[in-house]
Length: 549
Image (cartoon, rainbow, N blue to C red; front, top):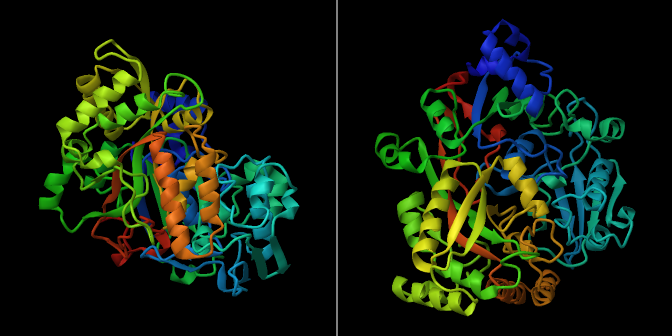
């Protein structure tokens, strides 16, 4: 099928019988939401997306896939420039009191929802209170923990109405923090803090986040989502900066990495979400102007189930497995895209922070492996005794190659046999979150904002994104002190101490720090590399108004 045919569900009856049956099966198993307007007029940007979002409800998201789409269809109080810097969003200006605790945001008079109604301060107040409400069960429920009463509400100890977010009037929102937060303006650019269209949500509930119902306040509207195939957006004429949005339509093509690369070469995709490792050497020679590789605030890691099972009460086993991995060989021979071996949790380049590497990072390979074998013995195991466990990861060629390499390292150094299991992304995330028959798993974390808190918060005992189940009162206490510390130097010291506490407990195995990797068609203008790897479609344009190179 061509991309156009996939998008046009109404015309599928004219396709061959086999194709029709296959599509019918896909609809039965995965669901196919109706396309309210299958015809896309005007310029079209085709972007790759490695896997479906788990949701487009801003309060149900946890993946980059969801965030990438939401950043096009929604907008927070602040937003991101083409260079990743924080810029005004729905709020065109704001003030902060001298003690750093009270923010007053002034919303644009011309901010509109896609149905033409005004975006109001009350829409933000409603959304923020839904986010922290424990009944919402939002993965980012504690994202706004700097706001007064947010943590207590998220923990079920206060009413959502006690959140210190108040609509003073239609265009003025006041937010009071319980402690200064240097990164707060970055927080309110994240999709989890986007406003909600109250009328549609109160009428339709979660159905309001589906195509045909979704009322958005960003540069684009949601037109169609065919699960496993594509997500289509159309320019939102009511958006306050619509006149500067030059691309009429955006299609996110749900693909795996190899299919994405092939479709890019066939000029069916203009911007890739990633680049296959095997293609990099030739691309550097043949298409250097289209290949974009840049530093990126993200860490690829393996996590352990610390609530029950093999790893729950065996620190030395977790430590031995971490030390047995040759991270340098991993990035040189397996990933090969300029990634940095990870011997700490917080990546390099984080604002006002120094990395806290493991002591063994300076050991030679032979010494490190000897140490790993010694710890393995102290953990109660003998080399080559046949210890087995399962390593789970989401289906993706790159994840499989990494898993195979580490499986071999563990086997060679410790005689451990890791059984590999892969699942479709949404199923995988659900299972990891519930710890359903999970022993060890692959995940990644990318900074929602450029601050160490964005990474270290994952180790808080009650953080919904703490998928390992790690719990340390020492870490929680130190992290809380850092969160409430007004002095930036003291805050840095406390955050670095918190990282050392968590890393000494080995709840995770950090493997490497990311670089962003994209192929950008020469027809696409306005792309700027940035450490957040955030690229809103409204900042891009297509020269000559075309949708292909």
